[in-house]
Image (cartoon, rainbow, N blue to C red):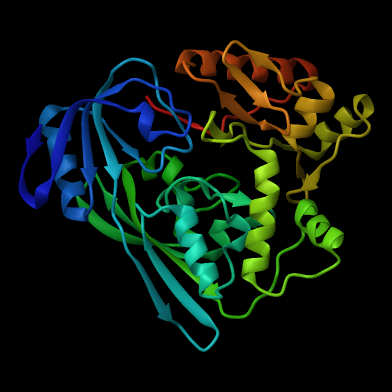
Length: 348
């Protein structure tokens, strides 16, 4: 164990599986839990001295960690704190540290009657991961509510603030996934929230939920409760199984390609992205085209209620998950010509 200024502690040979929702993976050569920018800087300098790569770990809900030893420094983000600032009579800026639990933060905003993030309830992981993935669910993407993101640049050792536009948000994408942004570690995120409640009910499951109840949502809490109930039906019990949630992205393809696919699969749904592209719900393809409902190989399977969700049983390995996911991708490509992408980050 190594200790220096700011109480920075670095442990050796740390098991990583307990820090991930898939509950699989090997050990880290070095593991640094950081609770401040100063400690993050120390961890970065430590990695430089050892000439080792850095992997930043938040809530561990969107990562596949290899089975062997990670020969680098895993930086475990534990920065905490939430600040609320009134921008005007109707708008609030919520500034949240990257190490906070995402859903705990969302619950806090909802409890305060603030609207904007309620459709993103129940998503596991940390606040720091929210801009990296541009997390989205039930008709809302977080990028639409981000004012700015504070980052620490591990190349320059300098902190800076990126505006929403500078973050270059796209579907499950951002500058943080680009070559330029790979050295950025998210330390705080600022979200623009509203005191006025305007429900987002474009997503079919949400509108159907309230239609069945015969009521309309009156506040953000109503939407949060609905989303949590909907999610509970689509995700496995995480006290029993490991999962990273949606393992694959919904593919975005050219309209012409989609029209060709309609000749073979006339009921294939789509959602417009822009004038030339559409998004295909991969869950439909996995169920209706590939017959993958509940598909299982060894200790890895697709969740029957939501085939985008990959689930692991106790004892599953990263190699099993990777092989399983590759097999899924090969069959989808064979039947549709669509090359699907993994949403989960692969530790390298």
